[in-house]
Image (tube, rainbow, N blue to C red; front, side, top):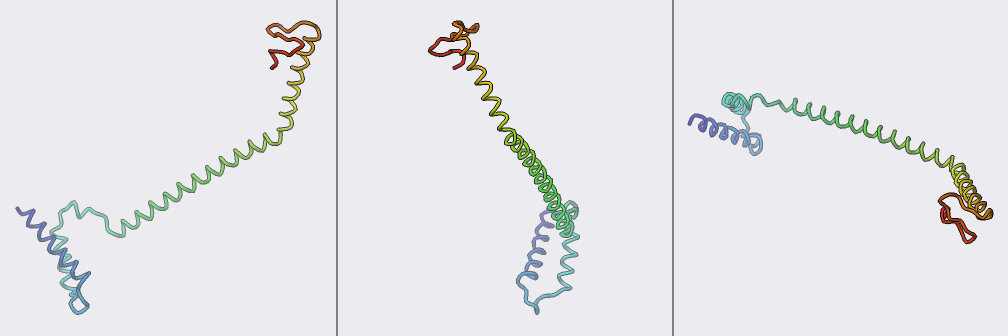
Length: 140
């Protein structure tokens, strides 16, 4: 029963404080009464509620949290930039050596064509290859 009485008294004090801060005119405002109400409220507040952080601590923690998130974002952006540079290097390498790769592929095709043509003109085929004058099944 005492806990309910305290809670109802706390609510009543909070209502009065709200009235002073939100509705009271300059003439109605009584700083001494507000201080007394705050002291009374502090005495009635349960211990677990007293352990709450002050508004300055909450704001400080908020800005610390924001700074940590910004640092994480900066690290992720740098990692993403490094990854893009690596991709660019790989693409640049392949673009630079594209002519060599195309030339190698053309030479392979020419060599396979020559092997099959030689087999047809010799009248025989490589093992597993059925090359005839009409074409070569192993090369097509």
